[in-house]
Length: 271
Image (cartoon, rainbow, N blue to C red; front, side, top):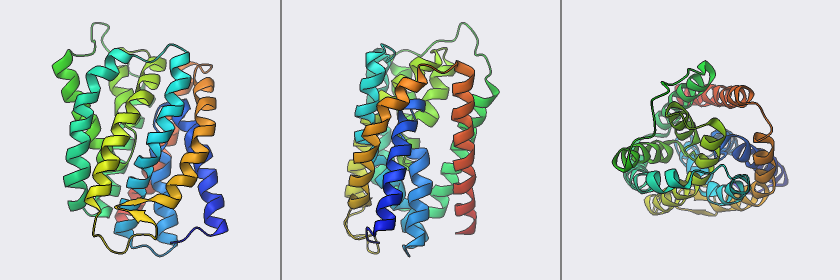
């Protein structure tokens, strides 16, 4: 799969869109990138199983760059909970390593697509229902945060997302205000993406049939185009997020996730 002018144009549009969504929703853009890159891969003749895995790995690698740009904008607004970033990050790195270095290579692409769809749809439903958590519920202590972070990192490693699909609903459930949850999720995207990307590169060594220019499961030419464009629009998304009402932000979050869950569920079922 080479970078034809058409593919480059599609990747530019994808990068601009995912950067904006990363800043707006704190989802790292992976929820959008994985379905689109899967579509581009299968259209170009990459085997469906490898198309899904390449999409997941490339999506995660691009989040390394998107997260830095997005979190700077949120930090300037003073909404990043750095105490939660410190508490959740150790578990995130551990969970990500287990997923990307071990489980990812063993599971077939169609199964990964279905796992992606189920967890994204669940997260969307939690946001859309907008259930009010018990006022007394708070984030757990350091040990509980390590466990929660491990779960978020593991799920992110399986589906190639920055963790916002799990961490935003989880923090909101623990009475962290939605704007703080989105901003903190954006900051968590960096350790999630970095740990998983290393795992995808190592785990994909020796795999045949990957797109040209791939390092492990990461399709580097696509990564360069997407990352270059996404860092331009992530700060814009973060600014818009702070201007939107909480309910509207949750509805946008849920709507985007439902669409993408539907597509990946379809890909998993027909594979």
